[in-house]
Each structure stands twice: as C-alpha cells, then as structure tokens.
Length: 237
Image 1 (cartoon, rainbow, N blue to C red):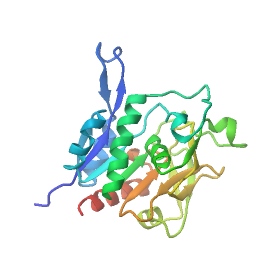
Image 2: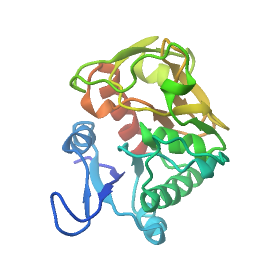
Image 3: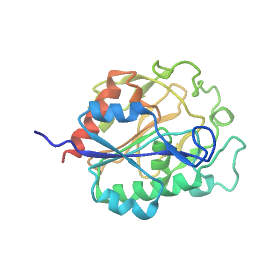
Image 4: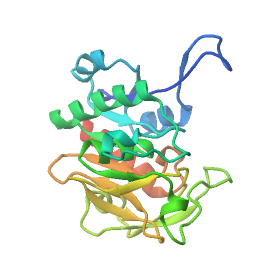
C-alpha cells in the first residue's frame, strides 16, 4: 500500500459568535476533498507560529488557503491602507511562519488566492490593495455566481511549472478577490488574466512552489485537478 503524503492546510479563524460562542477555526470541505482525491492526507494547521517547525517536520507538503481578509500592507512597505482592507493579523503571522519555513526546507507548497498573495509578499513582492481603484478596465474579480463555475480565463506562460502541469495555454477559472499581486518579488509570473492582473506565481529553484489567484479546490477546469495531483505527487518525494 502506498503511503499518502501528509499535506497541511492553513485554517481560517473567526471570533466568538455565529457558529460558536467561542473563537473558532473553519475551512471549506472541498479543500480536504481535493487533497484526498489527489491521493494526499490532509491535516488542519492552527494559528500558532511556535508550532510551525514541529508541524512541518512531520508534513510532506503545505497548502496556504484563501479567505475573506487581506495581508497587512505594512508587510510589503505600504504606509497607507485602503479602506477595503480587512486584516486577520494572527492568521497572517502564523501563515508566514509556516510558509517561509516550508519554502526554506524546499517542501512542496501551494498558495491559493490569499495564499498566493502572501507567497508574493514573503518573496519580497507587493500587492494591489484594491483592483477596481488600481487597474483601469479591470474585470469583475469578485464573481457573484457559483464558484463551481468560471469567472474568466487566464493565459498561462509557456515553459513554466504551471504550464507543464496543466498542459494548456489557457484555463477557465473562478475568481474571488479584490486584491492581487503587484510585483512578484523573487517569484516568476506564470498566469495573467485578460486585464493584465497577475493570476499565478512560482519559484523556479524550488521543486514545487506554486501560487494561483483562483480557487482550484472547486475543480472548475481540468487543470485544477492537475494542480492538486502535481502537488501531492511532489510531496511523495
């Protein structure tokens, strides 16, 4: 029997109220389903940076998930904060600890939506704080219909890891973000939307270090399933 690689997924967090009268963690089921469907074994990661090294010593791969919040602009050198920016500071601190250590180890890493943006920041990049105010003629990057359906296409750069994984120059993707990568830092851009917004990043000297701005866990395009398959395959070592 082939042992499934252990893939850590960062959680979202909410304060007391709503589902529980105490603070709680949450993550959509389809993240876990996508990992399991690709042959991995998913485990949830709490927001404790002091445990990052111990978790990573037991993990084979890391997925930094998305969420309805933003990276603090101060982390990439912006003194001003757009009014639309919402922070979850404890989550960002913990995710940065997991992400930077995983990359230093050469561990397979997949950043999804906000996870891709955090990857850019960790690699010395910057972000667009609010697309509608910064990108003339921008597409609607926060789609209102089902995320199991595409919102727009992305053009994939030939010769990149992403291109090798999906085997196509174009993908149909969902879209759920008001921010985007402005400059990729030490990463390489591997996908763009028709309006020029950066939609994907990768790190060339890593075995598997990939970030995508969309949510592939919804498996909208055949390439989405291929991304999870490639990530889990890389985690097999």
